[in-house]
Length: 240
View 1 (cartoon, helix red, strand yellow):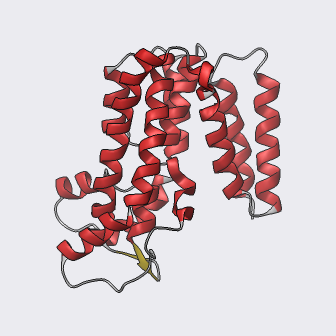
View 2 (view 1 turned 120 degrees about the vertical axis):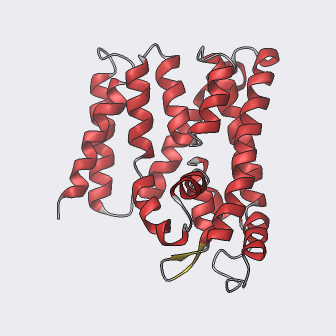
View 3 (view 1 turned 90 degrees about the vertical axis):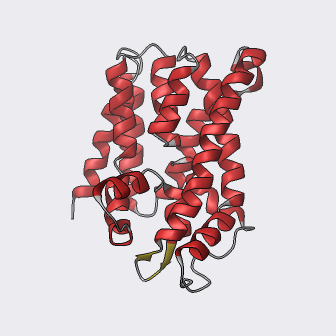
């Protein structure tokens, strides 16, 4: 879950690398759950915004809830809602979401050693590995605690799905989200995500190029296409 993505800076959360891993799964899961409380509060508010924006985009009530249950990724879901809300096609929305979720490939590889059990068990556990639980689950030296991952993941998952439902129900009474400035939530989210990624000249160059590509295509391309095309700038990162 990407809402998050800048949430660990809350400051009130316990240290993500201490204490040392407890002996049992139960203790580790409880630690992960406690550490994720402030993150879950922020995720809930973020999910409420998604529910409101999704309904305003014409996604109905059932589709956003199912999407939160199965996709569980804030930035990707906002991207899909933005594309659909501006008249883009389903294919463009899906591609945009998949591109934003591609970060979970290296995240999945990093936590794989901690995910024990059969295929089904690991598959279900992987659903709870998002940015927040990944941060809480890290115990140092590239190692992860399965208990912390799942404890944090369960709480964040409940906050995301519950917040989505509340936002969808509230949208009925709220009306047009532009009245409260909620239409800018999606672009502000991506700007916040981008800020944390610009750590080098190469990253800055890729960001500027991506913005230029998107702005150049917006006047005549179908909604969603500028977002997808802008990701071509990420190819700069492949240069050594």
